[in-house]
Length: 259
Image 1: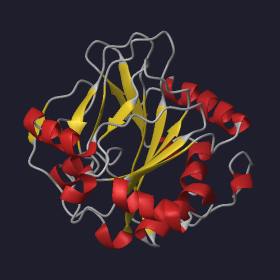
Image 2: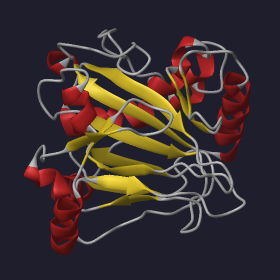
Image 3: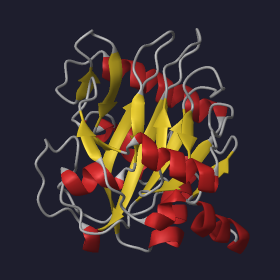
């Protein structure tokens, strides 16, 4: 999939692009079924709060050929290469869960904050792609972004504990207030199969799921091999140390047995 010049310009200006229904229904159904199988496995790579509520799971490619193929899907990799260049590896791969009537939330942060703080990523060159496994509404904990906030680079943060994962370098309220006054707030909603691409310095957060419907999202974070992490402090399921460049696989291979 190729981005237009207008889409690339919008990404540079706003720090994100949203697509509705990029993935087909059968692809999403397969990914959801595989997610359920993965969550039932006894893995250290699961993210679970002390209460027992799932926040998510990580490094799905290690236990799932389907999720391994998704990393190389030409629709995703081609767009990432247009935006940040060739020779990309996956720095972080996860599914973040918002269970019905769940209590878990994620504070305001920039992805580059933990990647720099915990993993030693040199520069904010990485990109994240979110794939909606469920319809995202205003009620089930959508991600809220501040358009244009990526242009300010890495902002000062305070590291706070977050149930189910490692402490997150988070943005102070005063910083979020200033950014929101400048760029506003944007929560892209859409059906399962929708995709949001965003810069690693984009300020974002998500609240609790107040609804009876789940809100599960896949996140792939691509990073140039030349910008590979230098001083990792977390297990590799949080930050990959395999810097082998990914090679694109055709869209038809996602649900196939090979490729």
